[in-house]
Amino acid sequence: MRRPILIAAGLLLLIPMQATAGSSYLEQLDLPADATYVGGESCLDCHDDVGEMYTHSPHSPGMALMVPGSAAESCEACHGPGSLHIEAEGDGNIIGLEALQAMDENMRVAMCLQCHTGQSHDWDTSDHVNSGISCADCHGDQVHFAVKATPAGDYRNQAEFCIQCHSNQVADFRMPSRHRVLEGQMSCNDCHDPHAGFEATGWNGLNDTCLECHTEVAGPYVFEHEAVTGEDCTACHKAHGSMHDKLLTQDGNTLCMQCHYGADFEGGFNIGDQAHAGLLGMEARCYDCHTAVHGSNVDHTFRN
Image (cartoon, rainbow, N blue to C red; front, side, top):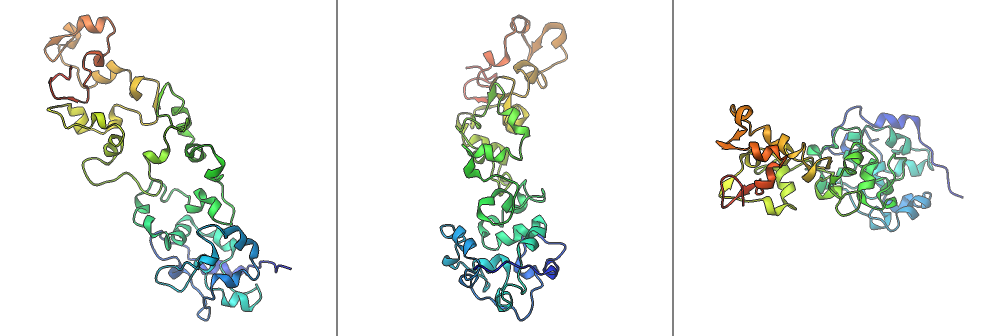
């Protein structure tokens, strides 16, 4: 018969009130001086149900993966040294489920980053940092305490998983002009790294992300559109979806006129010393003529 899991009320005192995601999780815990690490396989003598859950996962106790620079491995990497817990037959000191759930999000993140070091340098730039969520809120199928999110594997595509929280983007992805995310033709991860923000180095991290797919407008050009070289893509385009053609933030002419509007425009519809009255009067769009709007190698007015 499996022994019940008992959690001492005093265990919550092991967790500090403040924690930073980048610091060592185990070093922040006020662990008993006489507690020692006994190995995750020892935990399975009682908690064989949890061991079965993790058997075929990277968290399997049988893999005995250790926290770099410590003696903690598998179960003890999160729950702390288990010797006193075992000696007291389940009633001794251990970081139990209630204690884990009582942690703030930064402490939970620190718990994961002690092993998942590949994300530790990026997390502080992520939009998810200090947002009130932790790793387990997305990776709920990798832990055994309650989380809000339904696992990604329960959805047809990755985007449906993300919009559990990012519900504001659902309407954008149903606009007439949109990135085909809900259809599964691309994913949120194609543009967003959930563990890091946009790359801050280089010319422009946001534009670099867009140009990974939109290589046809990357340039360089002989004649460069200042709006492209001096702004990021979202100055003209909505990233997720728009009511307007080409994901534009406004209809073509209104958008262009924000910059291309001179003192003589009202009298003669002149733009760049050229009369545009006839063209604009026929409701032509600027990019019907200026088709190379991002830049051109043959014409300084961006006509082909």
